[in-house]
Image: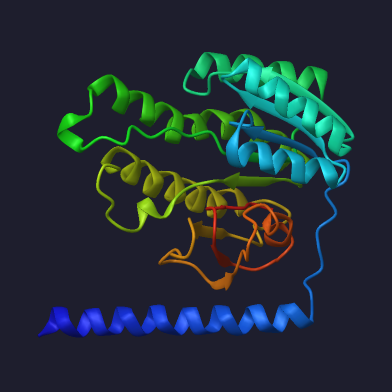
Length: 267
């Protein structure tokens, strides 16, 4: 009997949040949220050579940000660099970097600090998935997935967070997936890493605020297309574009979850 009651409770909580999200969409369709001005901000995007990373780069380019593009594919990253320049980016710097290698992350990070400056918005977007069932997935692929989807976040946070704290200004963004919230066949390796990366960013949000002049004012947790974090606050719907809501999330100033790409923000 108890499991049935819990299922009913979970359903009504989900239904309530969904209704609230729809109402909020209607309200902010009439009264738009103020957008954060990211012109001149140094934005580093990992996995920028294709897909969502490229879309984010083009979005920030149109907003006048200085872009730092990291990708393991030099060809894809150079193509994104060219597109961002044509889109009007204030400055674009492309670096070939394998985020699964700690030494390479630290080396390229030092190069960025010398050549560009202090990164103020870090977007951990790089990710891989094996797409294989748990017992069919080779150990080396699982290790690679762990290195890219989680450990790379540790190294980039350690490389760029100290300057954000010193400057009392910065954003950490974690692109993730709803695979961390629900079971998906063939994504066993990814699911655990998604949960871990979200938890890391959430814990970091709380830890960084202690003793600082300004505590973290936003913790944005989300899941890919519709499933919200179970520990989240109010929903911030993405609408049709996965990149269009990022600046709104950065300037929301309150805990929230997104019905779109997973973001965890420190400000």
